[in-house]
Amino acid sequence: MKDEPHYTGHRERLRERLRRDPRQLADYELLELMLGHVLLRRDTKPLAKALLERFATLGGVFAARPEELRRVPGFGPALEAFWALWRETWARLSEGPLRERQVLDSPDGVAAMARARLAHRTTEELWLALVDARNRLVGWERVGQGTVDEVSVPVREVLHAALRFEAHGVILVHNHPGGDPEPSEGDKRFTRRLDEAARAVGLRLLDHLVVASGGYVSFRSRGLLD
Image (cartoon, rainbow, N blue to C red):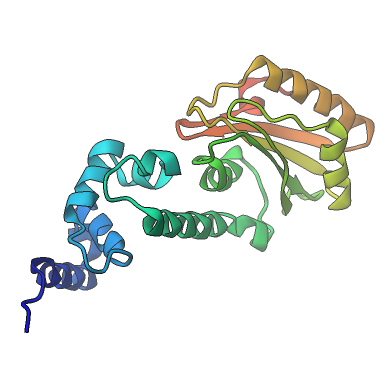
């Protein structure tokens, strides 16, 4: 009978520490245990440490793009699928305000929801957070998908989505895959056109958020929307 691999006992000790007090575990140990749910017959400590060395934090590891993760030796298709599952789960948890029809009284809630969904995307996407007359979230819709540095959506498509939900207000959201949320001149021009068109049909353009791994920018907070 062959001896068990050396990491088997170590992994069980980590699980026991997790059960007693999860706060005892270092970041690499948490990551090591997560990796172990996929790589059942491998010592996952070296890969956990390599991921943290490359991406600096747990947040950085989970926000990293698939092509960046694949550059780390040992990160293969099975882990890529697990990361996609984890991200989708986190994005849906972050979209809780939609299911609860929460009142949106600041850009932070939408930004958190959007960053969970979009921060790791490799191309730009345009989403709408749609609210009723009491600023309760009634819709969260993607209306466009573009390239690494541009997404182009006709104003009428944005208005059509808002009217379909019978929304009273719209918060425009899109991502910058490069990591810098600073709005471009094209972003500003599109926002002005949409604001004018929304007013013409009795809709309120409440804000435009640009989200990225480095944070987010609110047009309203910047004074770029009246």
